[in-house]
Length: 497
Image (cartoon, rainbow, N blue to C red; front, top):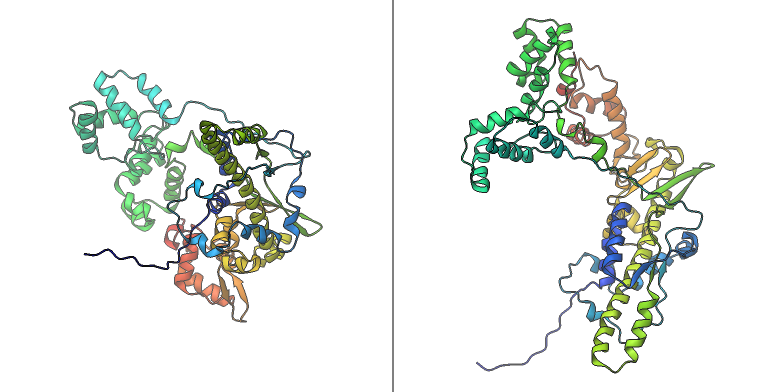
């Protein structure tokens, strides 16, 4: 078979490394960005902190207020346009984009705070973890070597809620395979019983029923209510979980007041003992990415960057590059390529941070103007229907860029701190033809549930009817969807005696 030469015209799309870096930084919230900057400082010696930086945000990013300036900066990286931001890149190499010229012109610097800005530090106190506390209690028990090993393995099987959900028969196989221990499910259950005597009460249970029963059994004072509560959990758990109270009243031959006392006894138990001692230790404070203040009725925006370090390209590395480029030695030329790539990477990183700031400012300022009435008053009923496309069209950015900017970002307002994406909502028409936000409907739905008679809670059909009476054209399935999004249980599960 003869070989043939032919020409083929092919259109392909590729992202520049700078664009990829920008997209990755853009989707990071403030705390994650702090960690990302620390990582970059560790791996790139050409990038360093600038302790003497004195530029304020206003000085550094003054071009963001000029009409179209931010969008031009965003687009200058490439002539490929926004569509490339949707295409995956599999083989981007930094050498493909290295310039052969010296980098004397690199003057990139980024300052994330001014002289008057405060620097906040988060102090974390470390202590023994939940698993270590259980192992300490295990060490106080009189167990043989095998039992102690089984106990440690069981503690390792306890999930974040405090339960051992793995089947005991499977644990038998695990111990035989990993520790060469021959045992039975009954022996493992006996060691698990020991763990269930540990604090916090209920830890090591295999399900909710067992967890609550352990807590009741450990009460020193077995009152009538405690005994009845144990009977309910042991013999009528299904009816209790589904709130079929009529069946419980009939089977136990008790009145409503007695049932109220039983319910009170059970609801004061801890269904998640794994989180009881560690809630404060595992809680991560929300760090807002945007801060909105209201002065004289006018919302004003600022970007939270106070804990982000000021960055610059190392002057020492720039000087080293000059020296190596003057040298005729082949080894020095190879070192020159390495240093050059590090300087370029540092420059790209600093520029990407600047573009991230500009893009976030542009998008959030647009959201602020779009939802001006809400941010000025805090009245949720004044939230306008808003989708990502509305903002993308206004700022002239790609939809995916606006999505990355909005995702996982928090906004601090005088009325609370919220996820930015919560301000995006669908629109719905009223009887008068007015477009209202789905968030407004959710607020009304929440108010209706809050004011209902808990002895006869409203069904989804009844909630739908009341919303329709208020002029909101909404179907029952939409009511159910909104209710689930608000984490409101169905009417039967909201029933109280």
